[in-house]
Image (cartoon, rainbow, N blue to C red):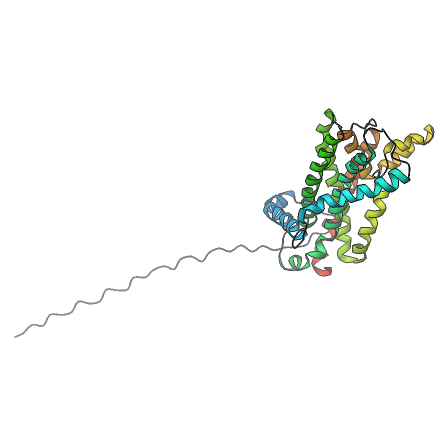
Length: 304
C-alpha cells in the first residue's frame, strides 16, 4: 500500500500592528483685541526672513540700473551743490575762511537726513508694495517696515566713506566725540522706523498717504538743520531762546543732525537739552507707532 506524504499545512498569518498615525498639531491664528504688545520672541524666530527681505530690497533698488550703488553718492552730492550755491553763496550762509567749510556742514547733515528720508519712504510703502505676500503667507508684518529701514543703512555707509574723504581733503579732524556717532545713527534709524510704522499702517487703509510721504519729507527737511546750523538760534533773544530750543527739539531729526555735526565736525554747540528732547520725542513716536501698527495688523490682509 502506497503511503502519500501529506503536504505541510500553511503557517498561520502573522498579524502586524499598523504604525501609529503621526500626531499633528493644529495652529490656530486668532487676531488679538485692543492694543497689543510686540512679540519680540516671534520676531527673533523670523530673523532670517528679516535679513532676506532687507537683501531683497537692496537688490530691487539697484536692479537694472546703469549706475547701481553710485546713486547713494550722487543724491547727497548734488543736493550739497544746490544748497551750497543757493543757501551758501546767494543766501549768505557761507563765509570765506569759515571752519569747517559750509559745503562740508551741509554734506554731514545730509547723511542722517538721507538715511531718514529714504528709510521713511521705503517703510511707509512697504506693506502696500508686498500685498501678495501679506495675503498668502503668515509672518510678523512688522518685518516689512523694519527690513526697509535696515536696507537703507548700506547707502548711508557708502556716503559716510565719501564724507570722511572730504574731511581729510578739508583738513577737518574729528575728536573723541566721534565715538558717539553710532548713537546718532541709531537715533536716525529709530526715528525713521517710528514714523514709518505710523505711515505704513495708515497707507494700507488710506492710499492718499503714499502721495503725502514725499511731500512730508520735503517739508520736514526744511524744518531740520540741513541747510542751516543750530547756531542761528543764538540770534533769538535770550528770554525766548530756551523755549525755541525745546520746541525745535521736538523734531527728532534736529537732535540727530546736530549730533552728527558735533561728532564729526567739532561743532561747538554741544547737543544737550535739544538732544534729550529729540530722544524723548523719538521714543514716544516709536512706542505709539508699535502699538498702533499691532492694533491695525489684523486688518492688513482685508484692506491691502
